[in-house]
Image (tube, rainbow, N blue to C red):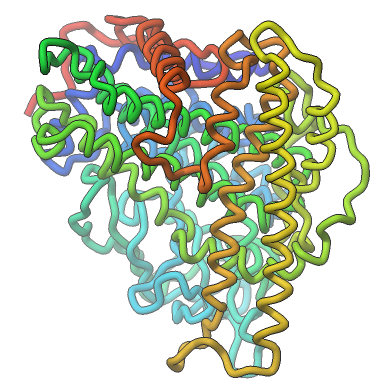
Length: 609
């Protein structure tokens, strides 16, 4: 299927929803029952992957200028969300297509044309081979070698653990091309290896490893033994590998938010549905006040996570060079919002959380296991926070020096965007972040807002106070950066061991708090620029006031919400659930109940042994 390039990201998501059909229908390739059955067997969901490919999912990773359908970063977010809400094994297996982004970042014109054509033919299943068994996230310590030999490179070493290590057709990898005289940051180069084009030597798969979640994914490795490849397999200049790797990760970390939104939606939907049908204490379990508030808070967290994700996608178009900070902020905070929900929902579900069968909400448990990996993907949470902490001095220095801008394109979901140009992403954004920079203008816009029937003067006054507190909190956090640096200047590292990684834990703490603050500002911006065209629930701003009232936006406790606010959030969540819509600030339709997937015989089943 080839969808219209001009349709909105929401409409594109609805098109994929219709293509995949209702996940409650067991015969559909991406059904909840089928996913559970395959998960129990640790089996790759090949039928689901085939259905996603038949839609043309691969086309949305190739820029329009190269013949693909990559028009908006939000398209990838929404398509990933649609797939992840059904089965993370399929989403994670097929979203490896995003690694072809490195060809658009570092490849020359000839390479880009070549790889685009291959992707569009459906001939690419890439894997990202950075990690090595002995080095983990410390990419600079990698020992995989790529020895130059005339117009070839000889590749030797093992990459593990990686997704699609055995089943990939193409391998994106880092290999050492420098020697002891080469600066550490320039010792490695990046290669995109077509396994079918290896001239000599061997490329073999390293066996799969059992995993806590993603039991159907090919989490394995790949080994090269004197494998010769042409120099055209190298992306970018020799020695540029680490820089290209980091630039690519800043984009893919941002796209990881779609995985979190998909799993978060299904976890809440599964628990809310189960508890609405379960009778306890002479009534539906979801009417128990503790349960009602827990579900309301989980729903609120999803709305905030969506706001952070949508703004980040728009920022990829408008402020691409700033994602050395932004990509880390978005990935950490969206994953935290959903991970906290998973723990609260598990507690609310009670004993059924421990039972794996479908009739005992096994889908929730599977999503909890699978979704937990997002905080590890493409740089774990500690790695992302460390990256943020290292850039805090630059952020503090740039703070307060922003220029006046029109922030509508960043926040107004209807505003047109320029083309997404991934090659513009920079490994160091000089402390710039458009979301934080927009806060003074958002406060001014809020001050000028007139009361309305749903949002009266009292609520506006409260929101203005909360927005002002966001500004004071941001000022204080960045002042702490200066204080921490001053207090540690000239002193030995806070590290007590021999590790070269010596980032002050106090700076990591500031980075954590900035992640939460960033999501709050994003939610405020989305509300201010979209309340005139979305529905009354969104425009009234009661949800926003509740979100801004949280100290850390992903954390909440029983009794935090006012009873009337909890009831409104709960009612809205149930309304979107019964209307078959995403849990979202805007209307996005899911597949119709009972809908069969496109092009599939009703008698087929994905759960047959």
